[in-house]
Length: 237
Image 1 (tube, rainbow, N blue to C red):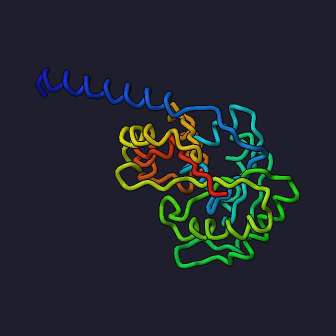
Image 2: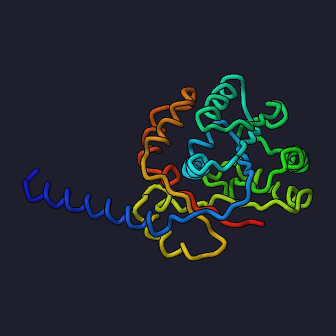
Image 3: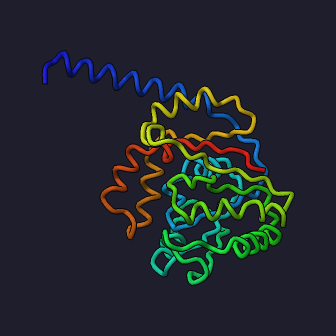
């Protein structure tokens, strides 16, 4: 590789870093969100895979939050409990694994999901829910099932604010620089909130708490996925 090529690569890298840093500062703002907050997860690693910027923001700002997990098994249940401790989340709920089995072939009972969540909302006086949008971010049916239950949850608990994590196209999903630029032009939408993670260290540490899931391609995901760096939350109700 010639010295000219190296210089060009270095300059491009610096430009990319500056663009991302500038966009992060532009979209980052104090969240006006009612607490306590409840995350609805389909699987035990959804926190690390998709919602880390928001979790880290709530943790750093001492905003109380809980995590509700629909599907698990003994190994992933233990991993999820360890992750909750790492996030300093004391309020976790893990459903009966036979009630909501993990898998693309399973479609969960929407009414039962809504009842289970509503019961916890009323018990813990939850004010805000954060979960997946109608595309489920990754397109997993279990993620989409959670979104499908939101209207019923809101019927049971109309006081609750609901925000969903915006699904991105393949380019925005795996090119953080492009997603940063696009997010900059969406930052003034009053129905959209952004949370930004400036370092990948927290995301990596979170993913390591799921050794049963931390296979080789998860390293690639952590390196390139925008969801480990920026969350775009859209007001649902």
